[in-house]
Length: 222
Image 1 (cartoon, rainbow, N blue to C red):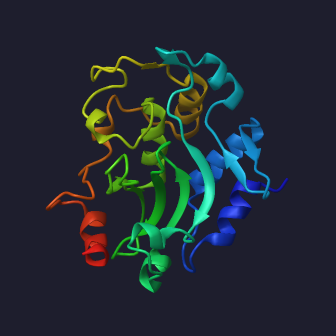
Image 2 (spheres, rainbow, N blue to C red):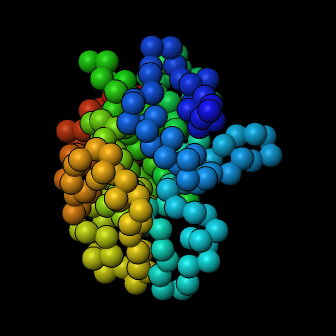
């Protein structure tokens, strides 16, 4: 059976970029568990937890569902707005948005670095999250990051702490089914904190950083 999340992402991938096998497995799990909706234009949006169940659990103080993220084939269409409003051939050849990582508009993208290695990076919205760096060196680590259980992965101030332990008044309960799938599928542990995976959290307004994505995109926004 055709996996719509995969086929739609394949259509917007830059030439020379391929979908990691781990993302294939994740998208298959999402669709096999009916964790998606199709919008009026036919674009499929995937989730990690049943959308209806998440909304029903939401109160002023807590919700179920672990990390909230929406997977959709953003591609390169709107990258120009993040990079100052103009299309750039190099940017469009090396970046591909595949998820919305924050309700305020932050995005996650596949990125080919200078060594042609595929990384997962974060594009902070600027109006909310400023986080803009490599989130994970590979797709398995990105999936492990999602399994930790933060509300969203766009708020780096929470990364040194386990979920719900940075003084938050709103409690996010873990997505146990997703955590079990990650452990059973990849046979790896789920870290306690995001800082175990995100090596050099950097922000759009940081002056310097060791993060390779930060240092790459600076040439386009100055």
